Amino acid sequence: MIQTIKNEWFSNIRGDLLAGIVVALALIPEAIAFSIIAGVDPRVGLYASFSVAVVIAFVGGRPGMISAATGAMALLMVTLVRDHGLQYLLAATLLTGVLQIIAGYLKLGSLMRFVSRSVVTGFVNALAILIFMAQLPELTNVTWHVYAMTAAGLGIIYLFPYVPKIGKLLPSPLVCIIVLTLISIFLGMDIRTVGDMGDLPSTLPFFLWPDVPLNLETLAIIFPYSAALAVVGLLESMMTATIIDDLTDTPSNKNRECKGQGVANIVSGCLGGMAACAMIGQSIINIKSGGRTRMSSLAAGVFLLLMVVFLGEWLAQIPMAALVAVMIMVAIGTFSWDSLRNLKKHPLSTNIVMVATVVVVVATHNLAYGVLVGVLLAAMFFANKIGHYMDISSKASSEGGARTYTVIGQVFFSSADKFIAAFDFKEAIDKVTIDLCRAHFWDITAVAALDRVVLKFRREGTEVELIGLNEASATIVDRFGVHDKPDAIDQLMGH
Image (tube, rainbow, N blue to C red; front, side, top):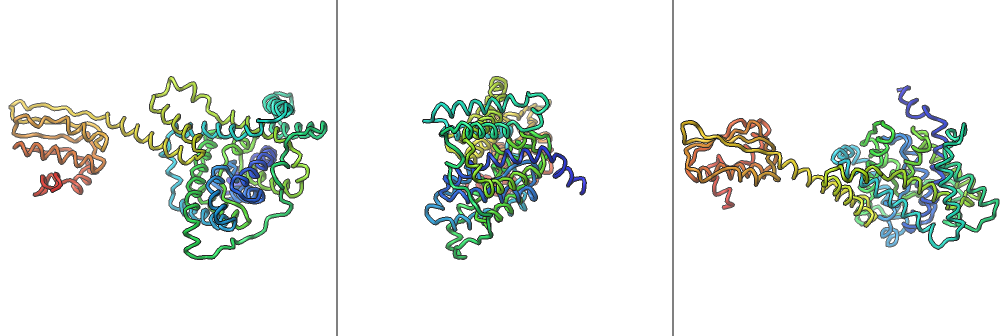
């Protein structure tokens, strides 16, 4: 246990603390922006980012992953805040946490194994595009100074690591933010800063129980929003955890992460914050800046609170161009450029799933819709492919009057029609043997297909014998099949 604590907390202290500072600085404008999207005071997003980042460091299942207020969650809150106000949002945040904890105990995090690699790639590419698009308002209708500062920031980010000796000691995004802030202050540039985004809080958060009536009417109002927030939050967190797993070559506990997200959201709601989830952009900033353990998440949350409360005057002077440069770096680093090069190599079905996921996410700005479409398409393509891996051959007996059909492969809803079409019901024979030793029946559609084959042969006066049915297939056939029942034909025809 001591070794585990050391590995998860104290194995990379310097890298984690420096990465935490970078992430905290990048969280400030995003938390404010997402608060504005949701229609609440900037403090709501900042307090949520602080509390969730700190709590998830202790209870989360993916070390090094950053959780805070996100745009995907903020979009789901707009109507609730507009129609019912902040207090109902806080109540919905608490219920979101409860639902996520329940999901963790139901082990719904394990459902990530049904998300194919092409869906994950599409999710990553779509998020990279959304991150880049989110920076465009800061780069439109602005003076040339903003473009110059952004270009300089990108230059620092990508070139600083090559500086001898110190290039590997400090995260280049942190150097970018510090240098551009000093330049902006020294030259007195009239460009947009963090302070222009909204007022920063000047006090520490305090316990706040939502001021709403505890009755079924309140539950009816907040439950649809809480359910949507819980699903989107867990989906984005699970996808982000999968990506960080790949980046660090380390595993994560998805079900623990579900419960951790729930606990963090309950704490957020009690401290006046809105519902939050994992952030792929900040998580990648953390990893690329050297963060690896739970200490980096804790440092990001603590530094965020200390900065906005005690260093607000200095933070307000950070030019948005510096943070835009950092986020452009994140977008470039997030996008899977190999997916473009592999379009000619990968199967058409894989490319369609990836592109469809990207298009739906970018078009709707809803990660859940894109992933749902991707998973459904991947399942359809898989079912279609497996449905073709079935072969039925036949051999007439040497004495005549009998034929043996050998079925090899998977029989289910996609291959049921092919299964029926492989039999010749017009052949005048006395007996048909269907060898199912190398076949498997998966669903009631497959059982119904077997019923039809047997009954069609019997209707022609042919004796039918089934052999070799494995135990699992025999169980479903015995339970749902009708070909051995007295009124089999009437049942099959629906009479």
